[in-house]
Amino acid sequence: MSAVSVVRESGRIAGVGIVELRAFSDERGRFMETFRREWFPQVSWDRLQMNRSDSRKQVLRGLHWHRRQVDYWVVTRGSIRAVLVDLRRSSATWRRVERVEMGADSGPGLFIPEGVAHGFLALEDATLTYVVNNYYDNSDEQGLAWDDPQLSIPWGTEDPQLSARDRSNPTLAELEATGLPD
Image (cartoon, rainbow, N blue to C red; front, side):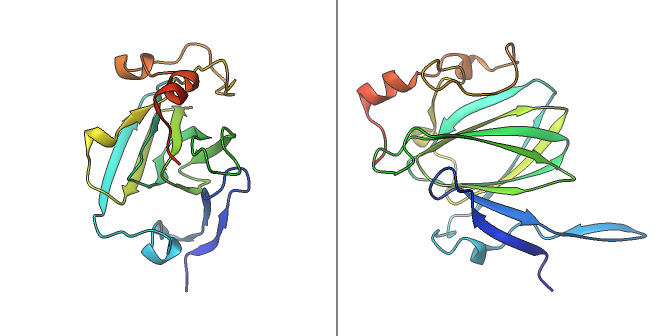
């Protein structure tokens, strides 16, 4: 019996996938299958790496993006507000912003293709587990300003807790001047 009910495109940004996870519960607790390679046949998972990010409430991480890596996110504790921005110039959804609410109890899983900037705001103390299809390479770790006025991202916060790096990420205009993914 498959523990996944639906794997579908988000509909807002091309290539972004939403995985509606199904949990099976009994008196001992619950079981949930959270990742299968075959859910994403468009991706090579030969260099699989799994990561975990723990964040306190009001921490904002991102926006980050990659040219050579996809991400697949599942929240295992707490809840987050994920935000995505399509930076791929050739995409029909270029510059489109999408917001996805995610929680440990309510899912969903979120598939993020290459060239789509992604970040999240911890709505409460949260743990995000994510699978990537390439080993960490800091030369492929790019950033985009979380508060870019050109994008008007609906984070739902004015004063998040940010890393020094994320406070200094470039705006979309600065990225467009230096090169964006195709």
